[in-house]
Image (cartoon, rainbow, N blue to C red):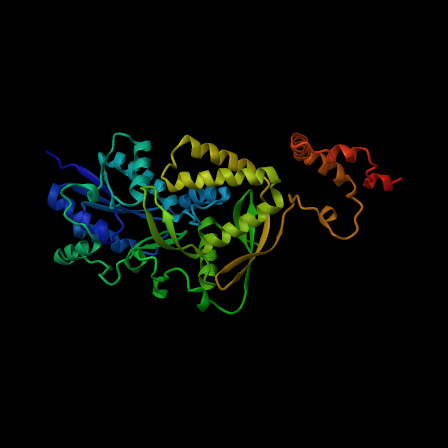
Length: 423
């Protein structure tokens, strides 16, 4: 009989390298290794060769970068919210990766998809909910949750790799769990597991520490069209080129590194260091442009919707009607989010220095503190009287209930109003 085929989400890192060998040794599956290029800096040819040497019958790399940016990153940028200050780098990539794994499984005639996520993390949920939504017939293999998986720590995985001649970059001294794509890189594990430990300066991969950034300010103009960044300093760029250039500017200026303790979906807190240089610049620029353009009610309600969107994405629910509905709402809010934002980059800070838009609702003639001809300040009295009427009625009712007569005495006196002085 033909062996069962398994599609393995393969990075070439510690976990998936061990899983590759372990599946062959323990189950004799035919494993097809699929590496997703979401913009991480890797030698993908070397990863494919390593997969074959480790036991895969086939290895391939799928370039996701442009689809990742246009169909996942830009919608999240337009929604404009983060999850507990985390700009959702890993969360955005997982549903797209799951989609590609399902497509390959269907093409290869495989009924199993395997991943290297642990039973403690969020990624297992993100991968599996997406796979279930796209093809409910596919079965999931998650070795970290299997009864016969004999490993309980990354140190044991490292020893297994040494014993089986699997080349890895991790060591017991350099044991971080990392995930990188064109949007960010995350770091977990090692000394980070104790929140009293300051993270080492050497942890930085994408950005320099702010104190090592240049002493000179860097300016960059970002053009947006309907909420999507399209040009830098007046030069039209494709999504990959634009984000890559902003990553370079952010990295140079020490922008976008956060060290947080977040609430995982599975019910525990975890500490992570995230580097998101270009994304941090874009989020600040996009928010600054929206300040000019969105009316108050839309801006305030969009914040509520955006927070829900971020929670949905963090929790792995990309392929859901609610996420689609929220994106439809967000797209309507972005119809006029077109303009230019000048960003000032300096030692870890991404500052909105200036902004302009043909759709700006900001009107200097109305907002000025100098003399103007368009706003009658006496009109404010009537507005305030109506605005505060519920509070006034409540106060009268309270006074009456307590036996007071102050309000009624006031009615008997002449009360001067601003209108008494206007002919």
